[in-house]
Structure formats: structure tokens, C-alpha cells
Image 1: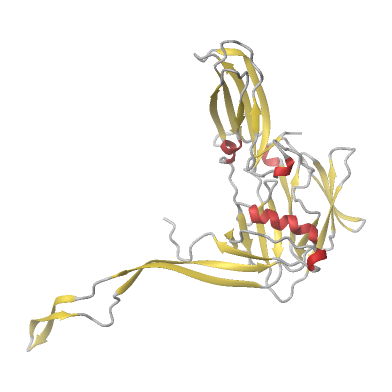
Image 2: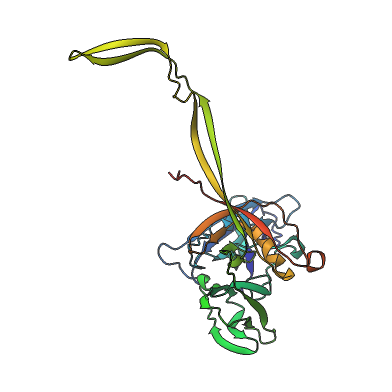
Length: 375
């Protein structure tokens, strides 16, 4: 299995100890690419090399490089209604060499290959955590709009097959093939009708590991028009969450004004008198219908306040990941996709003990202006 770099959290590489007295610095060559490990990427595909160098202190025999921030800029997260993992996983190869002051190589290169994804680790998981269970959603309870299709991210390195069933009855079984290509590491069970499905079983490649079971609840909403929220979750994959209940739309405008002079010291007008155009002057006047205060740079932002409806306590983790996600889209009942920003800055976690029935309200803002100003 690949060692995972989650690029929203630091990932440290420590160089081997080098005792040569002439040691001056270490050189790290990062190669970031897509495709299969060690292959030459196809023409036009990502294949970027970056060289980093770090001098040692007098008492040092090794140094540390942090590479996540560099790798993170090469991901492309695009959602247009289709779940694509083409640029959600990238290979990162590292070559470390010890060097003398004039650049002369000491010893040989130390090489490694990692799989990078635009996820994050939590503080409690510590340094360079790369564990992954096979499921690319943190909760074990999902909700879906009745009649909608299932869209679920899968860790292809760990999952051999997915069973979709009702209770103990398996209705559909899907084999997961990992070809070794970077765009196969995250795969999506997508556009699969979810009718009559209440259990998703992830059968792992490890023969000693128990399957992962995810419960799927079908929600029928007859009164409100639900919104589907697609966001980049902590594992670097697109996850789907539904806001089933009341939604409120608002428009907030913004503009600037300046005081414009409408005073006319000398206004020349012409009139036709006896077939002859005759000019006439009017002095020291202004029109009472002109704008003395002029508006400019006027635009607006549309906001949506959405309600989840009642959810299980175990789904709190999903709301937490939406709160810290850097890529969020909303899909309305007509399948229009909107990039949005979450305006909330805090989330008061609710529990069944304290709140009995759990419902969340979240405030989103369109990540574009109402008036098109893209230039």
C-alpha cells in the first residue's frame, strides 16, 4: 500500500544521517506526476520537478524538509456535476543526496515514492499520519434523497468490492480494480440507483480485515426542494451531503457613491424660429432630475440558508468537514451546480442527549458576483 501525503497537513521528510566531514548541505529533488509509478507521463500530463536545498548547522548530520505546501498547489479540484478523480491523486517521488560545499555528491541517493491527496490530518493523529481504512467518508451513516443516484468515493487500494444491499440481501456487487494509475486510487460508485438499498458493504483487500458497513437512509421530501452539497472532504475526495428542509435565498448588494456636480454655468440650447436654428444661453442652473449622488461599482452576492433536516449524531463529523472544506458546490433540484463559500465560522455540535432531534442550519454564499464581472 502507498504511503499517503495529505497535503493540507504538514508532511516531513528526514534525510539519512551523513557523517562525512565535508558535508555542507542536502539536496531534495521532488518529482510530482500522474500516471503509474516510475512511468513517463503522457504528453501534456503533469510532470514537474522541484529542487530544494538546505544547509546543515555545524552540529547537524541530517535535516528535515516539509513538502506538503509545494505538492498541494498541483491539484485541480473541479466539479461540474460529474465525479472525477483525474487530478485528486498524484505521485510524489523524492531523491535525497548529501553534498559538499561545491555540490559534489557524497554517497548515493535515497529515493522514495508517495501518493499525495488533498486531504488533511487532525492534530490528535500526529505527524505524517497516513492511515486509511478503505472508506473515503468518515461517517458510517449516510442519507440520500429517495429516487436519487448514489455517489460514493472509494479507496481503491484497500477496497476489493462493494456490495449494495437491503439488509442481508445483496442486490448489486461492484468489483474495484486498482490498475496502479494515479487516477484510479480514488474511485467513485457513481450514478447507481439507490432505490431499495439500505446497506453499503466495503469488502477490503486484506483478508484479515472486517468489511466496512455503511448504513444508507432513503429520505422522501415532498414539501421542500432539497439541495445537494458536494464538498472536498478530509480524505481528498468529493463527498455528497443533502440539505432536505427549508431553504431561504437572499441578495445583498454593495456599491460606492461619489458626489457629482450637476451645476451648469452656461447651457446652450437651440430652437427653430421661423425656419432658422437660433441658439440661446441659460446661465447658473441645474436639473432637479439629475443624480447629484452617483452610484458606481454596484454589485451583489446571493446567499442561501439551508437546513439539514433530522440527522443521526454520527453524521456530525460530516458537518465538521464541510466547515473546514476549501471546495464546496451546491446542486439544486434542477441539477444546476453552483460554487459556494460557507459563511459559518463555527459549529455548535449537537447530540441526541442534549438536543434529542438534531438539525443544522448553514449559511452559504455564492462564490461569484450577481453581475458578471469576469474579465
